[in-house]
Length: 562
Image (cartoon, rainbow, N blue to C red; front, top):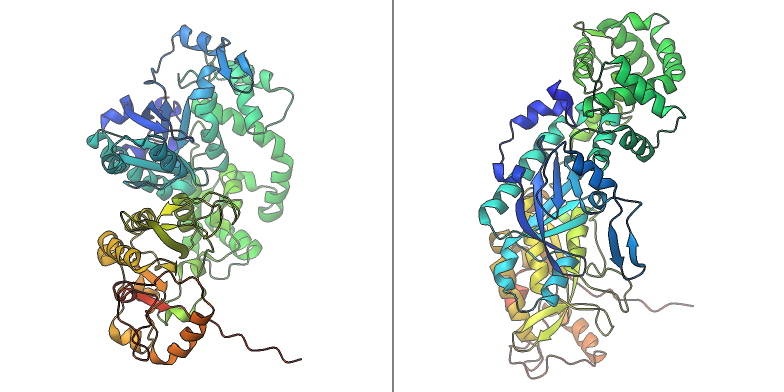
């Protein structure tokens, strides 16, 4: 019965292969960053089954002691600004302050960069701290649709162990993801929230709360819970994970039995419960119902083997080779992405992106830095991180002069009340993303450059220092003949889009532009002029221009003919 004690029974074998630092199970001390930038001491620990990370105020003590369950029901005096003093009767202290991230909700992470609003707030709120040192000790975990948890982990060994554990756990989970039934996945999502005293078991009261969370509505849940204890001769008054899953599966089967039987009888005949052979599954379902003319007997046998291995119930059924008998698993298969109407073979065959990059549509972001409106909202590096994680490949940076003492450029919506962020910070998070996604299609930085020449030179230096070999530097041939490389050849690279000093054909166009540009912020800067007018200053310094592949051009608007 040991395999019933924790979520994800069928994942246990694969997770046992994941080697983690024992300190993660015991709990490691970290400094959590709040939404307002405050720094709070917390503990991160890894569940025994390696499928959940807990974030708590202190190390979790796994115990069956009565005191822990009694304490969880006592009202706790609380104080909030909006309500003043009150008692937490609706939720226990544990429910309010114990958080967890399930392996299925782990979207990604980044280390060593200020890449979220929380970390930006922390740096602003705590200016006396040595952030050059602390930033190297940060971990941001993305979960539940790009929500973030931000930590500072001072212990280098613990920080590396946590990152390595997340890498291995996420890898193993996604390899085995399709072997978990939807019901089992849903149960695991709420299990740790419901099991408030962390004794790996849930009581009748917790079971009712769990059913409410998963929207299971039926009037006799208490009776079903007690009957299950009696029929299965369970002497304790609590259920472990596998038992709870079996009870929920039986309730669901009863509620949907008539519909399921009608569908299966129509496909396989009234005697389907005796078992469906691989031949019948192939001809009656795969070729007959599904219309998959390419299906083979080996495909049918492979499907049966997969369904027999699925995590479905408390006790494994006795399986007959090449015969389908587990119709709960078959029902899960019908609703899974493995039975998607879209041909999986077509999904695997990705086209070769070997034509010039200008031949393709590019997922592009406008005013990427903004978190709200274009007049007075906040600019944040986090907006770039989220755009990249959502698949955006062209990011816009509106660059302006920053502090004249350092010549560090800033990014914001010029001549508005939007806040400013450092150009260098954006470069750091872009590098972090490309490092973590080495085969990504090229990330294009679209520079709308309003900076004076000293700031441009520092921008060029920062990008060469931060990006290193990841930065694509075009050859003179590519610049002179406008030969654009293919997306395939630029995988894992960072490419610049912006302005270069004008070619001879563009001088007339730039002179027209200069006549209407009354913001001469480059006046007095000593750089070489154009061949036509030695005194005229190019807008972009050579150090930055030579890094730029895509040269932005003004579109000439023709006069309207009435």
